[in-house]
Image (cartoon, rainbow, N blue to C red; front, side, top):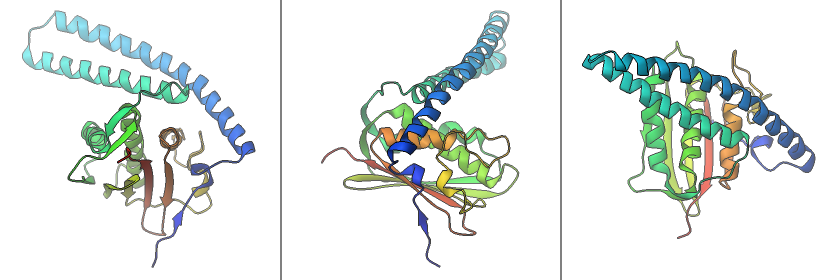
Length: 243
């Protein structure tokens, strides 16, 4: 059976009225995010203070290795917080020449510890680099959110697989991420990119909105394919550097 590719309205161009609603939601998201970030950074400060105190009182190599791991994790978390704030506040992007392959490499490497034992990731990396003009941190966050979404779609207690592929055909770089989860119901697929919309218990609804925001900032487009019984696949097109 031929797959049916769905282009959600919120993942394509918006008319003026819907764009205004989207802008208001994003502004509210910015204020909401700032409050959460303040609390998270206060918590991280407590962890930093405690780990520093422990470091000063021990010379045990194993404990010091754990402390070093904590410090790296906190540094990485602060970086993620900065990227989330940049997205929520629509801050100026840090554009440069980015190899999309390396951004995906980094995202998968840093998120592997989060993966449940029953879920595998298959990453089809192109032989050469795939260059775009973009923000490396935002692309990292894009892949991170898609991976997290795929894990939640499969279910942490279930077995499943995630397939990530990257290809390029001028003028587009194409990222595909397919999961073996239950898929997306036809009656909600048009809303998957709306801020604060979620069908998942305990979900925030900001992950895919973040993804779409990054895609939009990079001049790209996103589609979702969810054939019955075949999970979901996100297809992202980003403009390549001019040849």
